[in-house]
Image 1 (cartoon, rainbow, N blue to C red):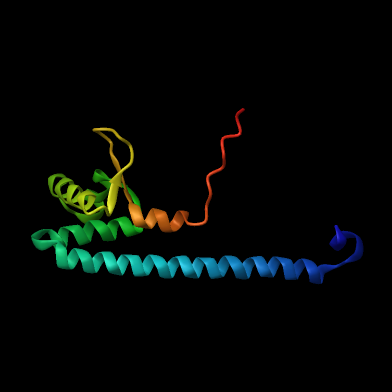
Image 2: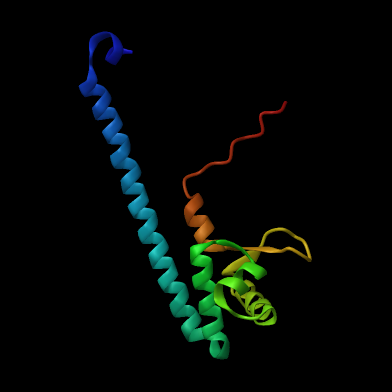
Length: 131
């Protein structure tokens, strides 16, 4: 209101630019944390993946682009077969890198767990307001 009535643009710009700076800093922090997590997971799969390491890495890299993914999407994205993806997803679940989130037998969707945790950091669930 002071901007409109008194022309106090400097205070408004200071407030606005402070917000832009803070959001940019948070975005850089999140991006760095994601990159570190991706690197750690890729190293882990390279050392613990055994014969499946290449397949596991291809799936993980596809999920870096889309952290919620179905098996058909992963087949299309990686060029791997449905059975190969299914077997590798089971292994990634055992390694706690991905988790199935629908609870269904068909049309399952998998989440890249740590990626989703990083994206959701700082967000708080709103309490149920129903009384």
